[in-house]
Image (cartoon, rainbow, N blue to C red; front, side, top):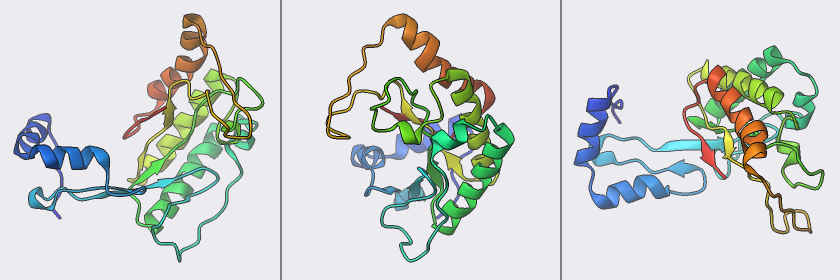
Length: 199
């Protein structure tokens, strides 16, 4: 497949050539780990890999093993942006080895309840620390030409039976600004991720 357009005008031109069905296909994906391409227009498929505790792609290159990294909360306790950049480069190398172009992560939900089922995926209860470490990891991943897609924007803290109980968080406007969005603001000030996964 050919290379993708590089300017906004080129993308608009390409977008106008897509049929409705092709646009739907691009939005819905091919399977759990692949965003479908459109061969007619030389748009390649994109393979993604989850990055919780290392690269864990579902169904791609299953015979290739990758390293298991510590959970993200352990990284939060280091306060070490340089380490996170290095971790990002290692995740990028392993994603490439698995044939993935995008790493799904890091997760920057905020620790607000010790029972939350995704706490192990997240850095900290501190939005500044979470945003800074996430940005360093994103920059490390993308320094090797692999995209990064931080998750889950925003307030992904209400979970139904994720750990045998329900967790619901009430978030007022002040907490949204000062805690939840602050981590994302810090991330986006210090990095330029290829995508963002919604909650």
